[in-house]
Image (cartoon, rainbow, N blue to C red; front, side):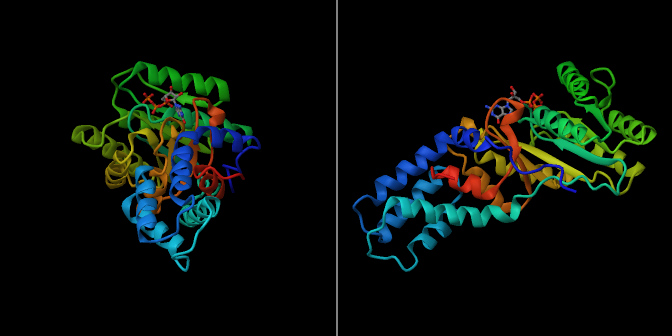
Length: 313
Ligand SMILES: Nc1nc2c(ncn2[C@@H]2O[C@H](COP(=O)(O)OP(=O)(O)OP(=O)(O)O)[C@@H](O)[C@H]2O)c(=O)[nH]1
């Protein structure tokens, strides 16, 4: 069952608007390089630099430049054609990871653990998923496991009200693993389809906070060894290369099964998504290109690859 369908019509416009900064840097870079110049080792090296500046990562940038050069040395090539070639290479990297989040219907409740540093878009993602699931008639329980901030608990309650999900919360400062435990009990008692557990934003280098996350996973597993059935990490694209170490750290502690990348509109280095796809091969479920919940949409490899180099759909 596919719970995150294709991006809504109209998302192309939001996507291209959101990716404007990265796209104009890539597009201008490519146009400047290939206007009235032959393709040779020097131009390809410069192309590699343009791609690295957009945060695609050194290896991916080198691979793409090499692919563009193949069989085209000493020929003049239109910038538009280079953009198409680059888009095709990017699409090839992204295609295998563009995977919707699937809530398997043969597990009840399906337990989704949401992790990520503060402000990376966890709450927005939970709201989006809860409303999508509710629109499909699913019974959803939200567990307010970010017990560090009273505001986070309140925000989750607002989403529960808005979507008709139920919410399990304790007072601020309570044990987060306890909330996860209550959440699973409640979800079982209500025969809910899906339990979504929010967690506190934590920096990947804070050992005690990461230990707490480990405890949450342990407590869930004790009750239901197959859970959590999905662990989704939200990443803020504006942190650039730091996103790579976030993936590594959360992967180690909580076994990340998929990613959501937000704030691609706030950076000229949106290529970080491509670097992460190439490095980890983890499914990318949703991307965010603006503040609103409608700006968070299923990730489509081809659209992203074309939009990021400034090509038409
Ligand atoms: N520009 C932009 N803003 C976004 C995007 N996604 C989320 N935001 C904003 O980023 C802020 C943080 O998002 P939240 O969903 O509250 O993030 P969180 O990880 O739950 O954060 P905490 O509650 O602080 O832990 C909010 O103001 C969102 O509106 C995006 O794709 N683009």
